[in-house]
Amino acid sequence: MALDRIRVRGGKVLRGEIEVGGAKNAALPMMAAALLTKESCRLRRTPLLHDVLTMAEILRVIGTDVRMEGRETHLQAKQLSGNEAPYDFVRKMRASVLLLGPLVSRFGFARVSMPGGCAIGLRPIDLHLKALKAMGAELTLSDGYVEAKAGRLKGVKHVFDQVTVTGTINAVMAATLADGSSIFQNCACEPEVTAMMDLLKSMGAKISGEGTSEIRVEGQTSLGGFDVDLIPDRIEAGTYLVAGAITQGDLFLRGAQASHLEAVLSKLRETGAEIKEDAEGIRVIGRSPILPTQIQTAPFPGFPTDMQAQFVSLLSLAEGTSTVTETIFDNRFMHVAELQRMGADLRVSGSTVTIAGVKQLAGAPVMATDLRASASLVIAGLAAHGTTEVLRIYHLDRGYESMETKLAGVGADIVRLKEHS
Ligand code: EPZ
Image (cartoon, rainbow, N blue to C red; front, side, top):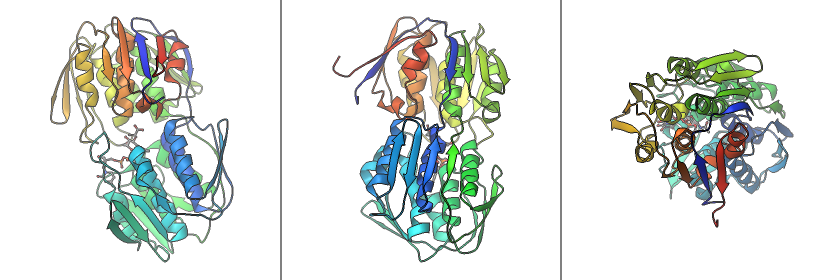
C-alpha cells in the first residue's frame, strides 16, 4: 500500500464518462462538525479516501462512534473519552486542526498538535488560534501541542488577517455554540465553506452571509444532528477535465457543478479545449494545438491553487510560453522538478513558473510529493511518449478515489503496481 506505484503508458485518447465523487474538503470538516452535537449525524456520498479514513480514526480515538457503511458515514459524539488530536494524526493530515473549534466550543478544552511543516510550505494555524483567542479561548503552547481552554466562548467581531478555508470553518463552528453573536470578515467563500454553513444551519445554527466574505453567527446552547449529501469534488472533476484536454479526448464528468469551477473552465477554454456544461455535468473535448495562457491562483472564485499543478502539466505541451503564479502557498512547485525529468521546459522564479511549451514529454519514473503534484504527474504520463511510473502514490490516495480505475475506464493504459511487485 504505502509504496504502491502507478504505471502509465502514454498516448491513449480518453473517451467516456467519469462519475465525480463527494468533495474531500467538505467531508473532512463535516465529520468534525459531528462533535458539536450529541445527536446522530449522517453523511452520504462519502468518498473512500485516505484522509477520510484518517479523520474517522481520529474521531474514534476521542470517543466518537463512527460507522462507515459503503458511502454512508454515521457519526455520533454522545460524550468523549479524550479531546486530543495527537501529533501522529496531525502529521499525516493537517485538516485534523478542524477538531479545535468544535472541541473547545462543546467541551471547553482541546489539545491539538501543531502541524509539522507540511509538504506545501509551513502552513501554520495562527489564523485559527487568533480567532479562538478573540472568542475567549485561553491558548497555551507546550511540546508541539496547542491547548485551548474556555468556559463558554463569547461571540466576537473578528477580521481574518488572511483568507483561510479551514480557519473560517473552525471559527464559525466554534461560534455556533458561543454566548452571543459573532461577525467574521475576510472569510473564505469556497463552495466547501458554503456547504459547511448549510450543514451547520441544518443542525439549527443561526448563520447568514455564507458564500460572502462576511459571515454572521448567533450562538446557540445546543445543536441537533445532520443528514446531508456531500457536494461533488470540484478538484477531482477539474483534474479529469485536464486529463481529457491533454489527451485530446472527449470526457463527460457526471455530477460536476460548473458553478464551482468557473475559473478553471474559462482557463481550459483559453487553452483551446471545448467545454459544454449542463445540469448533469461537464463535458470537455480536447483540441490541438494546446494554446498557452497566464494563470494566477487566488481564493474562490479565483483560480484554485489545488488545480495549479495539473495546469502546469497541460501547459507543458502548449504551443507557446505560459506563466503560472502561485499566490496561496509558499512552496507548491514540487511537481516542477519531476516534470522537467519528463522533458518539460519549466523555469521557476519566486512564485511564478514560466512554461515554454514542448512538442512532447517522455515517460520516466517520477516521485509524488503532495496530493495535487501527484495528480499532475499522472496527467503528464497520460500524454507522454513511453512509460511513466509514479512512485509513492499514497499521496494520490489521500484525495483521489481509485484514480487508475476511473482513468482505465475511459481508455487510459494505466495500472497500479503493488509495492512487492
Ligand atoms: C484548504 O486548506 C484545503 N484543505 C486545501 O486543499 C487548499 O489547498 C486550501 O484550503 C486553499 O484553498 C482542506 O480544505 C482540508 P488555508 P487550508 O488555510 O484551509 C496560510 C488539497 O489538496 N495560513 O486556506 O489548510 C497557509 O499557509 C488541500 O485538497 C496561515 O498562514 O488552507 C496558506 O498559505 C491542499 N495561517 C494560506 O494561508 C493559518 O492559520 C491559505 O491556507 C492558516 C493558513
